[in-house]
Image (tube, rainbow, N blue to C red; front, side, top):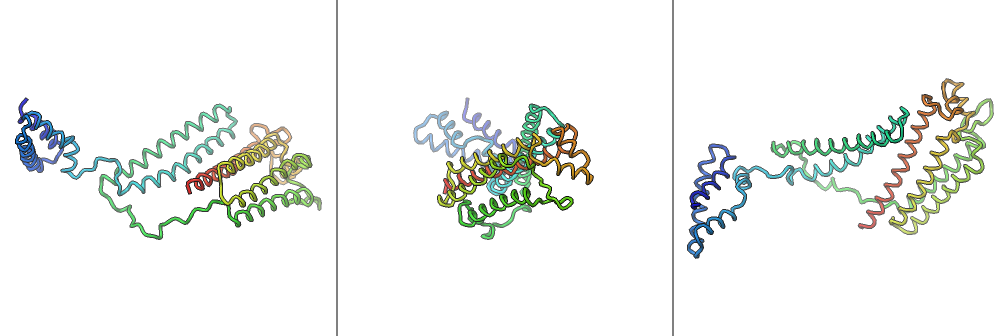
Length: 330
């Protein structure tokens, strides 16, 4: 194979993706530069074929060379949009899949679907949401990159600097935690002895009075443990994996207490439900007495309340581990 043939093949591969008006100039430039480079190697004693191969190898992939001549990027998203794309994608992946999973699971539970169907349908819907998020978000930024648009770009300035992240171990967090737990204890006592609802001058507790003393006693123990944990966290000064584990155990304990009582019909006072039914809440008491008939309003509200409690507990667990990881990095 002759030098002319190899060089011609390389030049043809390079210019075929260029605009016709630019091909002639690029061909002439490449022919001259390749010839000069080969000539220099021949003067150093290399064989003609070896010199040609070495020169063409140094020039690299003809497609990449053509992209350089055409000023065409060889990446999906370049540095101009990369950070914007990555921050938006991370934000969407933190929010949308969780919402999709929760919404689909909630709908399946309300429609009384089997547990296996609830889990499989929710996982499939969440996976599809993640794929669509990644694909369509990336596609938008690819189009922006290829079109050369700068309409979406904003000039960075110091006002965009994030505030220092709090680790949740300061004095204000301790006070807030203790005040919230104190209010929770006060609400339990008020509901039992004074009542948030008054019927004919009598207190009507919202929580089932039969929970006293043992059921409520378990909840009070969890609240005391939470208060002790808040003090320990404050004294430690920062989150740690060990504290995150303890926080997870306490959160799961509260979740188990609430859900077991809720779905066995032992959490809410039947007299309160009967009062709601008498006031127009048709189906409440019947649903409670029958431990939630499958189409009853009580079952639907129980599912909604259960999902709300689970969402709050889930966020508390995730937030604890996130703060522990951030403290460890810091």
